[in-house]
Length: 274
Image (cartoon, rainbow, N blue to C red; front, top):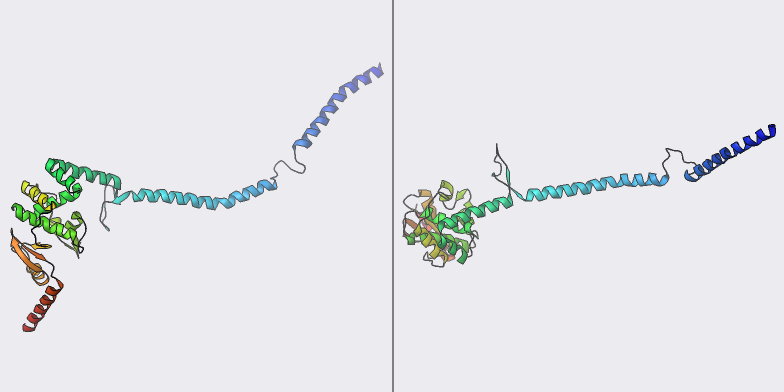
């Protein structure tokens, strides 16, 4: 009876011992020797250091991308105020594309209001609506109530300046030119530009001028002598060559080199007499 009991105990212990042995073998296989649960392998440590070294570079790249995006945004924006001018309410900048689109729509609408003939003038002369409308406005402003010839002469002066290398290259730039703080055309400063009704005589005069009809004799300047200040008239008389007078304006051009020498000699002789 005792022998039978001992055999039964051995049968019970063998499976338990076998299980413990299998568990030990599995642990040895799966866990690297000498590695504690919280130990970081050398390769993992090196990867972490490399990642830390890359962080400044990645940050610089991200900053560059951010700056490029910011620059791209700024390049699409233009200020709506003059330098040094403060704005208390509303946007300080507008989108350039939207601004150009709005300007195009505004001039297109004005051209439509002027009728089919005006649109043909724009197309035939390869002008922008802005250029055409600016020329109409300055002619109407400078020769209000005048006949076709007087208005043509104003248009001729503007176009002569566009062709002259001493002046800007576009109608708009010529009309709005400012030299040493003085506007070249007074309607750009006194508010008349943009606030006039374009008459049929102005349309006709501008159309003929754009088509090449030019009777201005090379005039680049004009002045209303009856209303100009004495200082302005002295500059015209001393610095330019008088051509003719029509429609309340006296017209002038630059002197040639020979004429300039004669004018300087005459001025010197006058000073000696005085």
